[in-house]
Image (cartoon, rainbow, N blue to C red; front, side, top):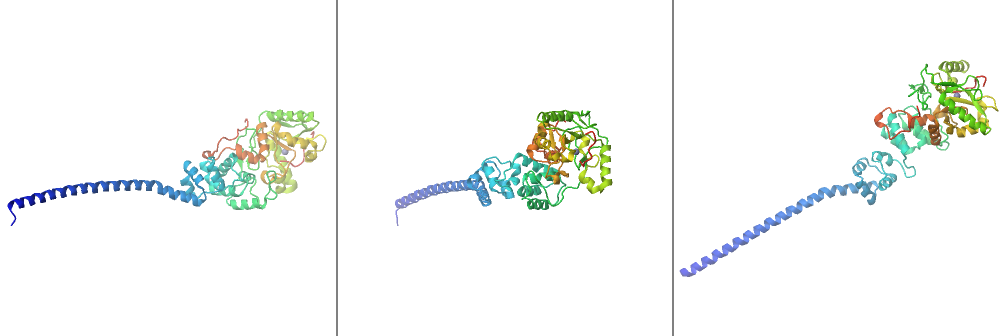
Length: 415
Ligand SMILES: [Zn+2]
């Protein structure tokens, strides 16, 4: 039997052991708590990183799949275009290049994605794009047109009727690629229903007004300040609006200094005169022929007082004008005097008139020079740069400024 003393010693030892064990347990517990806090903390960090980086990685991989390289992907992120590009699957080498150059316009990513580097977009393309939308084309239709056609193939659509099936028009253009250019444009089908969806002239007081087989002048329209030209400059009883008359005389004088001699065979025609002319044509050749050769009353530019038919002093009448030196000179220099050749050769499809070498229209020097530089017909130029917008919210950028605001009458056919 152990003595009392021994028992006491053992108890003391056990007590100490228990105490020590408890201390260890407490330390272990504290360590366990510390460890789980750390794990939790790491888990949060990992989760945050995952939230941030996983979608980015997924996006990057989607952009890569579309065809973008890592440098372009960086630029896409910098410009914050990734969502729109991925959602719409936009890609073209041209778009990638423009993004890399930081020259892309965000609102036209769709348009960039249908173009190639050899047909880069210019300011006038964006304007044309908006004019198409304003005319009723959807973005999808406009993209199809810009994907396959050139600028000069699209601009006639601003003059033509709205085409529900733009694909038919595109095919017609592609079929004529070998003969069409900026200076010659013809198609198989007709896209312009003459005298059908007619509208009054936008602004009868503007020298820039467009009068064609769509836009007409009212029957009582008479230009302000009609001035009769002296016989030095014109046949008898020939008048122009005063600003056009001044510009015309300056033009004739400049030609005369060079030995180029031309005069106004006809200019302002009142509504009633045009009516007589047109009815005579109908009586002699029927309406179809009459429409091809003469404007219906109200639809003739001659009623504006801003139009002249030229003749050379060295030949008879306007129909022979094309073969004269005078034609060569006036057709090349007209814009410097504020005039344009209104119905050029090779553009009948757009103007609705056969080539008229003699028929010139005053629009002012600034617009005349811009029209010639553009290679567009005035119908197209007006609809692209000068026409008021149907939907003002689509108006793009700053439009070109509106312009401030023979003894026997010729019998040859004329608009
Ligand atoms: Zn004429």
